[in-house]
Length: 99
Image (cartoon, rainbow, N blue to C red; front, side, top):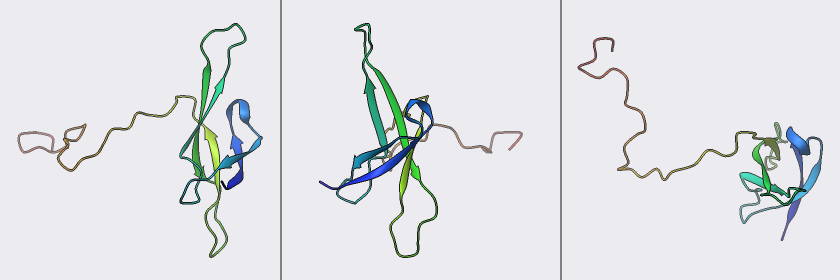
């Protein structure tokens, strides 16, 4: 398996660089979860980091990545099927006086 040294920003891992395994496409995972055991034997705390572009890459080379701390965790994703209804109603309905 191929890995890449990836920097972490924010949170407890700020400034550290860890080797992260790359996927089939050559990119690291979109989210990186780090379980931290509780010293008192309670449930583990999970640190969540999100993958973001590191900056403009060189011409012809692949984009490099870094991880930024996400204190709120990862928002839940739902499948986006073509027949799914949107979460919010669109603005400006015909019976709307403001729209």
